[in-house]
Length: 270
Image 1: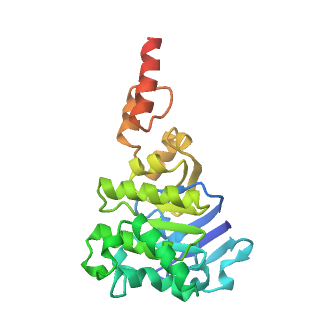
Image 2: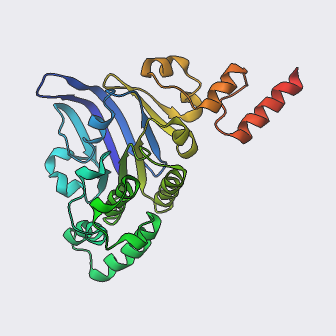
Image 3: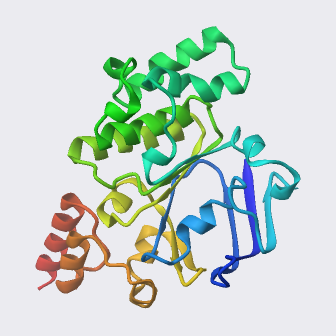
């Protein structure tokens, strides 16, 4: 699937211009992170990708077809969106019913729903919670319930809005697994997040936004080697990357192994 965004503008009824001429393309299965400070336009932007919001000007084309040709319900079959606040997305009386709802609306067979349910409940860690009311789950479980309900519809693209909010280490590890599984299944994951450690551990491709515009789309080595882009977007690299910069290592480092290797190379040159 290919999403092409052309000169996208969005102005809210208040007169606030949230998006100011965005041009980009999403295709393939390489996970993409969208970063930038609050108010950069990240959520407004991704809500245009499945028709939750409609452009004030410009176009969003999905496989060459303008998004305005169909309803959000139509596009949600292909592009799933998980809201930042799970309470905005949960409305049924059990986790199982939440999982089944979207697939049933798509006309998926009972047998296929049962097969998906077993796999996805395990993937999101809710196998033992299927009979529980979603509002009796803790915040982390609610988030994974909403992710599971969207995964049940088997979208080509999954959009996650701030999935790490409130997550502990185990939750972040589960998110990593979900992103890996999506890629293995040839599904694209687009994720908005402020967690730069999570970004560098799970995404090579990054879009940096500020003031309703895309400042740069590139791999993480390029992004975190661009102080002007980081300053303009008010994004701070992960702690280990900042330490590497302070020590003037030859390239950005994103984990302990990379740090040790670059530090040893620098030490040998002294």
